Length: 212
Image 1: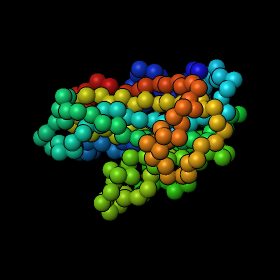
Image 2: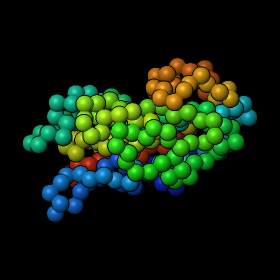
Image 3: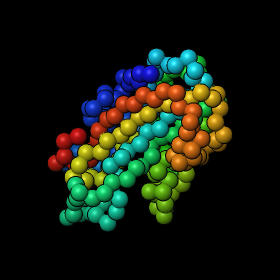
Image 4: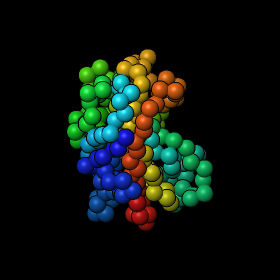
């Protein structure tokens, strides 16, 4: 199976249009500002004959395992700090006839407190992304973040982050998930049912000193 995107080129920096935040203009006095947060175009081909549905997962694998230095003036997130995953998008029960998602088809822009009913293909369900936990306790932003929300690595991180866009072809037409599921729940239900997988990886940084 092959995955193509007109929005994100494999191995290249992700355009700010698909990010949650972008680097601000120096004159503004701010380090970062809201970006387009547009869902990227995705199209998959060469689907196995045994496929009956699809699932999507978009994951940042370079998130600092400790938040102590994240976005703190005068500090940097060390390169050698252990890294963990951060979920940006989960979707399952994508019907077999769906082979493409247009740019912006599943949402755009930042929605404070999260998208309640993100748009998707008929019959599909979408999970919670990890901004749900990140914004916990934030008076203006706390909520349940369903669907897609794009990159926002720490502006003082010393490495670029890698964002992996996975599309899975499954040999079942339906998995027992409801809106709001987690990455682990997705992994559990698709185990043993993945007949093909395709992936695109893009990079992103909010640190002007770091080349994405």
